[in-house]
Amino acid sequence: MFAVVLVYVLIIALKLQRLEREVDEIAGRVPEDAEEAPREPARVG
Image (cartoon, rainbow, N blue to C red; front, side):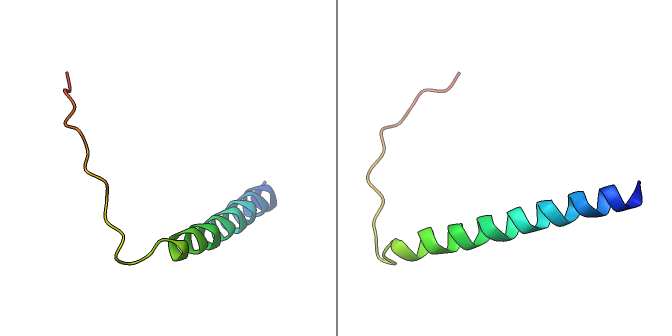
């Protein structure tokens, strides 16, 4: 049973590592001085 949990944790760690690389790549495409577009206020509730 321990081996199954260990393999599961390993798979999740590898997926998380890949996701982190993808996020870093996407974040690198956005210019540092990019301004956010103005947003409309929205009613909540």
